[in-house]
Length: 151
Image (tube, rainbow, N blue to C red):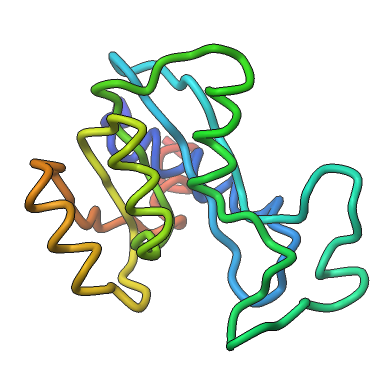
């Protein structure tokens, strides 16, 4: 049995989330273009800085300001290495926050596939609709990968 594209990319995204260094929520993101991974990211601190899992979250107005979100990290990786995200898709473990949603749109990403709802913001949903960004919740359970591996 061959794994389908959505499960393949979502499995990678789920695995990435295990690298997250913010203890509040483990999130992974994978940017894909032409069925090829062009970037990946997880939520964590600025490179070289202290991590939430080591020193605790740095909370302000109910948000950890120490953490860079997975979606932003994956977009910034493309920027750092000069890789275009125009027309790409992003796989994310959780529905993107409103700030990540705006960045996804600005980066030219046209498809968002996510595993689970998480504080879905109505303005993010509005922006996706207004900017013709396809958003789809993908039913995925990590245990599915065990089934693929055991066959």
